[in-house]
Length: 189
Image (cartoon, rainbow, N blue to C red):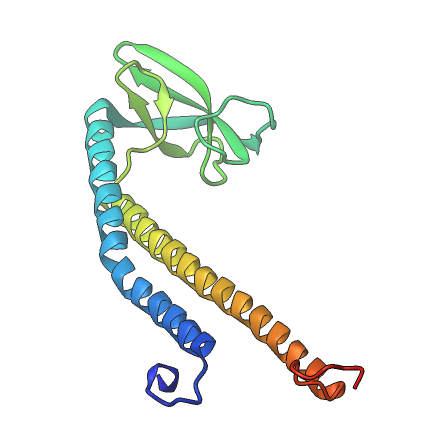
């Protein structure tokens, strides 16, 4: 704040550097509403997706007929779990058996809750309101941090440019001092 005062000994470059830091701080404050808006948009989108998933997905109880095994890396599974289990459930009057990803170790004879979409395909559980809030919080934090980092980077680049300018100025002054030449006199006299 002293650099922004009226002291005549403060250089213009010091004042400019202080303004850049002040602008970075102001950017951090002004980024809060922008980050909150981004979080609101992500929350609204996530709630909409959760509502759609809740409409077309339903839970059923399935019986584990073959316990958890290590899932091959190239398998096409609904989630990225490392274990799988073969489960069986009744769909109407027919019995279905399918290999699914198991979120935990499942033993033969255990009961698991699985989710099916309207087409009867095994899918992941629908998103919840907590998932939407978490997504919104992550988006808010990410946007705010990105804006603050950009402001800090801009202030750093201004400072670096001003430091280089000051170093060149000091080098000129030291050169004049070392050769006892103020730049006005003829050197050969």
